Amino acid sequence: DAFLLTRDTRKSPSGEDIVLWCVDENAHPVRIVVTAQRSVFFVPTCNSSAARDCLASATLTCQWRNLELVDFKHQAVTGFYFSSSATLRAASRVLGDRQIEHWESDIRLEDRFLMERFLRGGVRIEGDGVIRDGYLDFHNPRLTPSSLEPRFRILSFDIECSLDGDLFCFALYGPGLELVLMIGAPQATSTPV
Image (cartoon, rainbow, N blue to C red; front, side, top):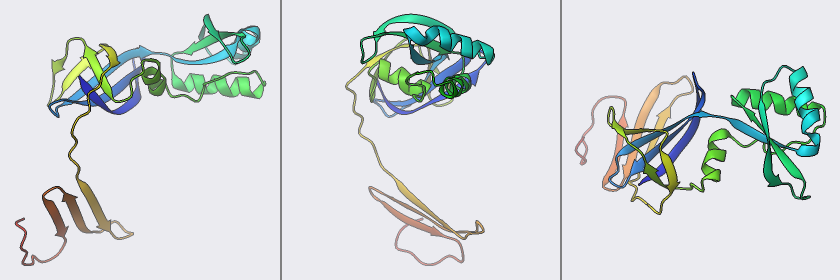
């Protein structure tokens, strides 16, 4: 099990990959890469033909599929799938300009991925990981929710500099640590540096 810290999408030869960084129960870093993901938005099925025509005339490529979903009016919904988030955003602009109703084009690929799997923090990872440069790396594992809640250690830091970028000092504060490093001549201190 691991606890989710960050999520992002990156371009790859296969389309777009979701990259999740986590920490396991022993505070070791874990990277999860889920490859070849597609961005999606939804269109009322009664408007899907008009939406497909608009996107084709704008030379925007997508795949579409009628889904077993309904909107708040209980009307059928069609999913429009794109190989990149940039293409999805362009398609959303085209449909918006033509006033063709569509939903959820503003939900980021990695956020949708997490929401659809009910992943909010703790993550159970099923798959084979490979030890890399100081972290455990998983590619396309099965992910399910977990109740893991790690004990975090906190370190605050503050960097003081001029408007021109000249560094004045660097301060660190955390459990058992209160330290300010100053630029200039050394001065006596009671704290070992």
